[in-house]
Length: 222
Image 1 (cartoon, rainbow, N blue to C red):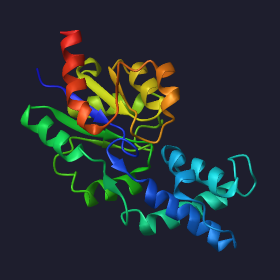
Image 2 (cartoon, rainbow, N blue to C red):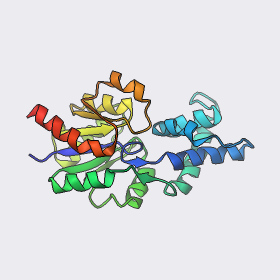
Image 3 (cartoon, one colour):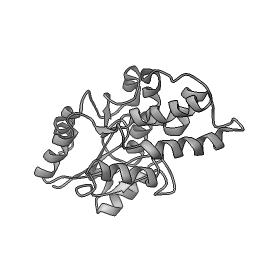
């Protein structure tokens, strides 16, 4: 039976952190501050503007200048968002395997569509991707299940015939709420020590391990 494998984007399919960190450091330099080491900014990449502004400028959403800086951050990011972003090792082979095995795959990200779609296209994923759902596509962002349910509906799959792969707790929360088996991508931007409390159905340490994890999950529910 054909299945749909859905992926988070940042930290799961694509290593977008270098461009996100560069945008944060651009804003620091504009304020006369020294750039921060990449290692300090990388863990915040899955949280997007909110995480990078907190790490880079100590700005939280309740700060009166937050919205102004959020807009500027997104503008800076859009200028350079395909400069350093690459697929994680093993992703290309994984997607080729899914196609060869008759599986469809898609993307469900909290990145808004106007940023997500050009990067998907730049990485030459658009032709094979069955659906791309952004954080502003379905009226709710993860951890709400709506984006995942929307992806299933658009591709003609029942939620139980989908598997969701992500590197953040909200990915696993959303997948479970949508009734989908979940795989935690421990190679992404998460804190590895936090993963056990997510209660994902499987955990992988590299993209190379995703296809075996998918096979194991399908055997479990067969």
